[in-house]
Image (cartoon, rainbow, N blue to C red; front, side, top):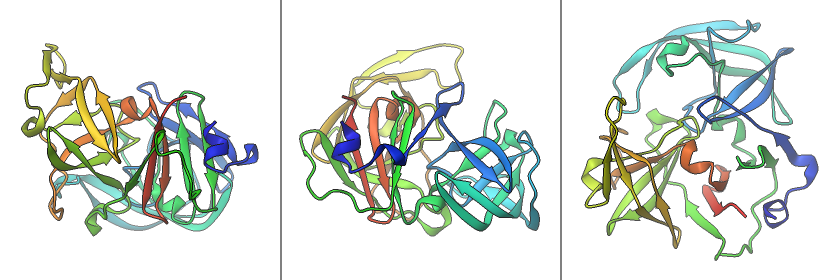
Length: 272
């Protein structure tokens, strides 16, 4: 149904696969080397290739420090350029990215990521349930059923964070920002906004406190969220509102999510 609603044809649909924790993977071609990379809306700039991936022809342009969103040190990586990179039907010449140790980002080995820099002039829609991603250069349809689709305006992130996804929402009567990251397999709520929501403790886990039944208002719709890890969210300074929630692929897998960086829009709908 969403293909027709959002103006896609079947020729614009590509298969998804998934990491073991459930984050989306797409096949890319880097100068003739094909491999699955994570479609990661949290990759600030370009792409990331890790030392776990198959070797690809590249040029090292500089050595740099990798930072977390709050500006703290994450590790060191090499900035690289590749002659040719094909991502979901479009070829990019002299694409820039980084070569890093996979341990800087994950507890499990992975090949790398593709960020939103490869979608600055086109939109895409993720359907985890049917393992599909659709891509189009056409504008979003002007008329969508607002009872089914929630329209969100993307909030500009501080320049240091690159092209990532923030939108305004409301939880417990507070206006907040919500960060959307397909590269996370779990979701979080900041303790300041956990309120009186049902609290469960699961000893032995890295994040042992969970919140259940959290109603999040987005674009005139209410989404009730469960299994939110309670943890302080440090997404850096530069916002007018606090960042209260991080929604990862565990939540996004239950939604149909459309990202349009060009139009500064995020459109979400429940599966149907």
